[in-house]
Image (cartoon, rainbow, N blue to C red):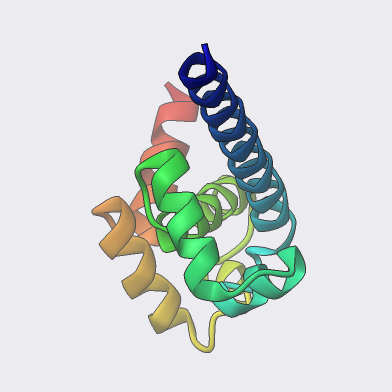
Length: 130
C-alpha cells in the first residue's frame, strides 16, 4: 500500500511538472507572437519568462518536439507573409520586421519558405486575381 501511495504521488508530481511546462510553452508562444517582429533571440524570451536560455530551450523541445528558434522563425514568417500580402515593398517588410537589411530578410525568408519574398508576393497577387 505504501508503494502504491508513493507511485501515485510521483505520478501526480509528474503531471504537475508537465502542466507547468505546458503553461510555460503557451506563455512563450504568446511572447513570440507579440515580439518576434523585433526580438529573435533566445535570451530575450528566457528573460521575459524568468528562466535561463538553456532551461527555456529544454522545456520547449520537450513539450513541442521543436526548438525555440523553430517557433521564433515560424512566427516571424507568418508576420512576413501577412505583410507581403499588403502593398508594402520587400524592403519595407524587412524594415518593419527589424532585419538589418532587405538582403538579410530575403535570405531568411528564402531559407524558411523556399522562395524569395518577391516571388511570394507575385504568387499571392496572381492567386488573388484568379
